[in-house]
Length: 117
Image (cartoon, rainbow, N blue to C red; front, side):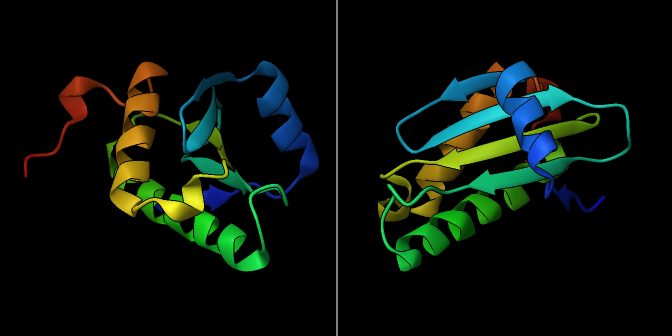
């Protein structure tokens, strides 16, 4: 199922204050269980990250990493991914591995949901 994007400020604030979070050098992930069907996600990039080109690359990399991991998510969740200064400078595989580790730590991805490569 294709996930939707978060657009309302109240949804972002709800995740910031009530959601569980994990941080790494490239990415901060906030997650919270929800009642509806499917997953929703939002991406935040501040001007501290750099110019528009770097912010857009950060969003692109995070969106691509989430697209890879999306099918392994069980249940209905809301996510907010916050880019850090390093996000635009690293390869997508590194962001993907950090996102996967964070989602496992938050209990979103179970070890039994692993795909066979």
